[in-house]
Length: 321
Image (cartoon, one colour):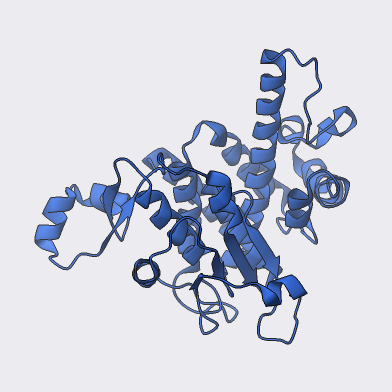
């Protein structure tokens, strides 16, 4: 992630903090809503372009049919003041949660019970304008994933409302010990921000990459800040933990990978964050559900209870990962 994107993200989080949105979970969730709305608008533009290039004369399946075009990011991003806030809160969010329920159930589920909590119109406008400068469609999955990982660092490793984020070093070690592979069904019973699931996916992608690279556990930015190569860093820190990273160019079936990812969490707020984390890492069809796995049923179906997993990550002792 380059320094300009990092600067923009820092400006967004600083703006929200100064505007009274001080709970990290809340402002990550609020940023997630806005990123999702922009992603949907970019996806819509991409569908329209493909439709024109293929000469389908407007027959593409659209997220925003003509009468709903005003709910697209590109149509309302120029609004400001209370008009912007009220339009997002009272019209855009309800459209996402209700009108898309039949055709785009995953989008509707994401926005179910969603509440806009950026109440200061000026703060909201600043955040929208900053996000508008980011072209997610042109970004690689690595960059989009890094963006969300950067936001998640604000959660820290300490308890927040009874939630703990497992450190990357521990997650990477556990994933390597389990050694998941394509075809395994991977489940985290308390997935939180989806850290274990993301690390499992990256582990599998590295396995199926022509030229995987070795990355320090602290990330590639950690090396850049120190002006070191990995070899130099290993010389300075002999026991430096690393992991492999790749684009999965030899993966035979992406759909199989997506459909093998399961996650449960008792908090809808954390579930939305984990969904966005997976989406920005390229996984759009993971099976995530709000459920309390410590209760007799707690939102679990009979299929959930009877399902058998070859690979199980996470722990009921670590409420979020």
